[in-house]
Image (tube, rainbow, N blue to C red):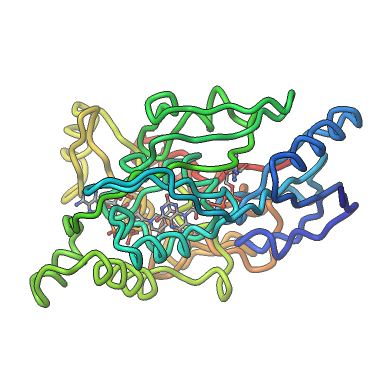
Length: 335
Ligand code: FAD
Ligand code: NAP
């Protein structure tokens, strides 16, 4: 067990917050994980599970033990003519997994290319992009309970996946470490180009193969989203609100051309549009600013986690005051 004290976390979070972990360790096997859990329990240290740090806001001093699981194994569990079932270690880089699955002729992850982070975090917020959510290909999530070290497995249904949601943000919030995810991928190429930029490219260049589609997604993302290496950010800072049909009718009476995407449970309104309409693109809140091209992204230039949360709070309040809509923040807070 190699547990380090007072570890700088600046390179472990894409917002570039200059935080420190009271203790930190990385492990790559379930046995080692259980040892660390026992040690943390004996030492009364709360465990904070960190993946790639692309969806977290860190406090300056993160108390307890920051734990990163680095196992990046890939195991074929079964295969038939139509599907493969593959178990992937939680420590594998997400984008690397997407591209390696496509290179093997396993399809389903192409719209989710170029999302930062590790495989283990994908079920936590049921990552989604360009009309596809990871829940559509997850069969099983395996992990370890942080209080007892006991292993568990959860079926897709038991994960309670919803729009950027799962049981891991609620009942099991901060209670588990996900060690692997089982994916069921198709051997039959299918593509979803329902989002406008992809639809446009398909009209110009013809229907893509899944690999071409992944490359289109990478191209569009590179052109629209700031790279955290250059402008530290955590992707979309706010979730798109899903409001009731009545709320949407009232909103459309007050404001012209509100973009909307009807869902089963209500109407999804892009949070980026709400923020943009207030003229917030490029606006600074101390060291934190709204990205010039993408109103959902907050850029942190040297600020603390508190600075980021303070900026987010002002934006949330302004949206609420103007539209009466409460937008929720997406990244998780580490204290
Ligand atoms: P972290 O940020 O390290 O952790 C996030 C949460 O998951 C924390 O609560 C953490 O405790 C928990 N967690 C992490 N690993 C585990 C584990 N093994 N077991 C249990 N809990 C764990 N998200 C999307 O959904 N769609 C996008 O298109 C998208 N694009 C992005 C673009 C950019 C430029 C950036 C910076 C972020 C983007 N995100 C997107 C957000 C983020 O990349 C994803 O949510 C990603 O899954 C987070 O992975 P991570 O490993 O960095 O998790
Ligand atoms: P975009 O294409 O400019 O669209 C703006 C918003 O409208 C998105 O949030 C998207 O919702 C919604 N939308 C667009 N077309 C839609 C359709 N046909 N059906 C339903 N909803 C639609 O978005 P973008 O900012 O460039 O991002 C592209 C994709 O990458 C989105 O899916 C977005 O979620 C994802 N992304 C996520 C993060 C993150 O950190 N979570 C960061 C960057 C990009 P959805 O967000 O629900 O798809």
